[in-house]
Length: 225
Ligand code: SAH
Ligand code: DHB
Ligand code: MG
Image: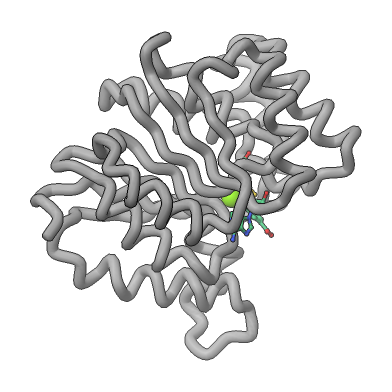
């Protein structure tokens, strides 16, 4: 099976199952016009995130890695008007484009883009003693994924859903001692999840317009501490 075929099938499925959303489409156009890397989730993956958030009745969402806010908008579209989404982004240019995209999508009241290295922002969030998040989407620099997961767990409750993007990296995740630092980061993260007693987790491989990669899904099953 080829990349062309995967893309063709994604287009087929998107046409059948996804409704046009001007806010999402404008976000992709503005992100591309601003020269942002096109590493946003695919539309059908964005809708998967949206449906997972709906299915668990999320009212508060934490996202790590905003880029132009494409996955942010998908996730925020699942929230009630009283809901809140906090998204962490270290690149000021990405954050600026994201804030514009989020405003255009009419979501500025429920979405906050926090500028700065996620490890620092996570420390600040923890210090604020907010209520725990109902859903977390981790999609920033891959080598820090293990640390992002640990912090997310500290800000979770029993039932919190944690989703991690890019856990397969074209299959390189199962090459120990490989040269891909992103895949190595995912191995280190997966080793930690495997022995983490507070979550139940699975991972699935994905193909589509974004190539060959995968998602991890974890549900917090026992309290932190
Ligand atoms: N979730 C987005 C894609 C995120 S791409 C979507 O699907 O639409 C990864 C993002 O993480 C990039 O914008 C990158 O600038 C950001 N990033 C990289 N290192 C980071 C760090 N240390 N802290 C916060 N964000 C970081
Ligand atoms: C990259 C980052 C992502 O979040 C993604 O989904 C695909 C690729 C990257 O930085 O290469
Ligand atoms: Mg990603």
